[in-house]
Length: 254
Image 1 (cartoon, rainbow, N blue to C red):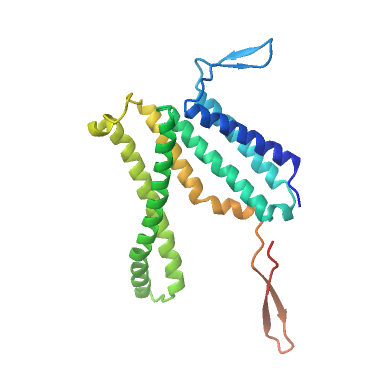
Image 2: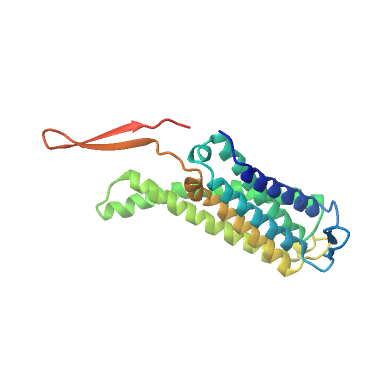
């Protein structure tokens, strides 16, 4: 099996734009003009570089996803191809966060701070989900038992759903509260070398929330994009005595 040249080209363009964006966010260079040869150049001194780079990255990632989906089913089920695409998506998420943070303050420290924030958000959300399971599980069992429903498996699914929803709401509220506090709370304001604008803080908080939600719901569109094969094939047949026979055949893993 082999991935297509169109997908390789789209992935390469995405990686190049992400590399340029990360270097710009870490204050490795200034992007003041864009040259298309000796006859034409564009002045970018008054343009919003983060927005321009972010739009380019979103476009190339969309092309990358389309080209991946246009490949054969066997390639989309290929584990190495799936890992390759997931790495590209991870790179795009990290780059978008760096661009949003670079609009506040461009330095190498920004990269470290953003990485620490993402790690804290990941660990905190997982901790809240686990804690929510211990809280919602007995609560769901008590509520449904009074309704005459005693299935423990269904209660576990309900408890997992509500724990995920609660954890996501808490993370969003905490991120918004931290963004407001960094503008209004003096001990946090004093940590800034240059006081950021409310718009820059709002963009960074919004980008963090979007990336967090995309990470939470990525499995839903990965199921279709990667064309996962179901673990079992269910076959029904009518037996001579009139009963319906159901057989489960394990599918070959790719």
